[in-house]
Length: 253
Ligand code: DER
Image 1 (cartoon, rainbow, N blue to C red):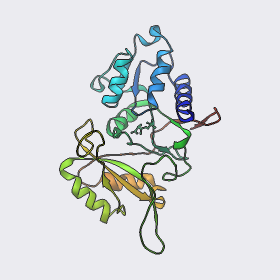
Image 2: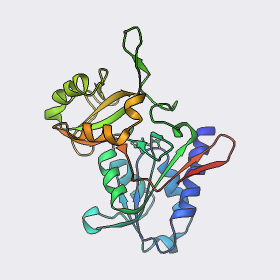
Image 3: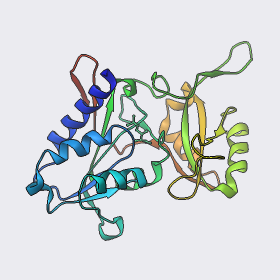
């Protein structure tokens, strides 16, 4: 279908442009777009991949690497990666991202920051001018019941220590103007989603005005006691590739 074709297009373009023969230590992100990244890497051939190592951003990413017959690497052995490629939930005109739809943003941000080059691949639904306005977001736009309601849009995924999750929720509700912040509950498991690091996820919708200053918002959230990592990636992405419905690719640098 159009979305899958768009994901594949973005992934193939990114691999062709950013994974060179001399790149040996490669970070693999999480989500449903990165399997096409691995698919394209495999097409570079066994010879090329034999002396490469691939670092995962969580259990799904680890399974993808091992099931593809690629060599798994451990972050403890590498101070720097050549390149990391990952998906995103939304990317704005300045390459700020909302990530964490797959609850993997802690390890994703680590591998993004230690990579010489961090690339994002996504289908057209994630391509926004301003964070909070893309159609891909699971969080419905929420409004207060006041006469001039501020429009609450995208939920920012926040990984929190289970011990602190109720106090972080209270802070988000009262201090950071996210009255609809909620604990992410699992679908295929009773109770909350538990991340690969043993933590919980809070989805916190913010107003478009707040999301216009993502770095400021990131710092405010990160300073709340018990927050482990925030699904706002600012000043990290080198390039983003979006597959479009018409079969073209949009690149943003
Ligand atoms: O959680 C994340 O940030 C993942 O990269 C994920 O949200 C990307 O989404 P995708 O399944 O549309 O690639």
